[in-house]
Image (cartoon, rainbow, N blue to C red):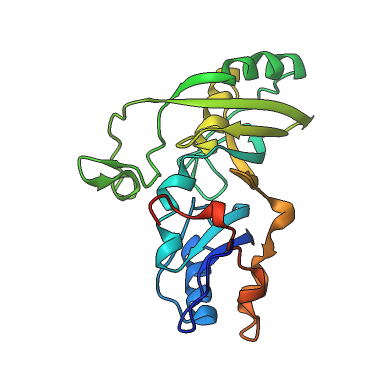
Length: 240
């Protein structure tokens, strides 16, 4: 069974491979122009420097899927850079510390053991998480640092490649996991400091990068988005 597309607007799921340098909202702006549909959301944002799977929800019936899809696990390829710590825990932040310590492969393998299974993670100050009604990044930009409660998350990390100062890992994680924080915390664990220098989401729930449309194509005003939309019945929000 397929969900119908109305004549006055397009509806469905659209899988996008977000290019580096694009904000998540810029994809929404482009899609609004291409679909003439105002009601567009997503099932998990990505920072501008990050790339990979973004599940775009087009039309009122499909934006209702957001809460359902946000709870699904995600998978990433993450490149960490040792020896440099930033205030945002990633490559876009201000450098706040440097270290000449070079961790050994054995030290890294031992360090990663602490980032397996259920862990406690403190959200970074530069994040959209709200505390007492204010987004943390709004306080961070003013130089304000407040105490944040930790949250339990599920993570699985796998070491793929190490050539100092870069470490490439695969991360499978639950909702609410900050890969930036994982990079920062591993740097602290190893005593050398670290930040997240590259991030690529390869899977969001059941949706993989192989099924995604190149996000750069959204700049083509002649692109027919309707041919890429998914309308399978099992993607419907509950209650429709």
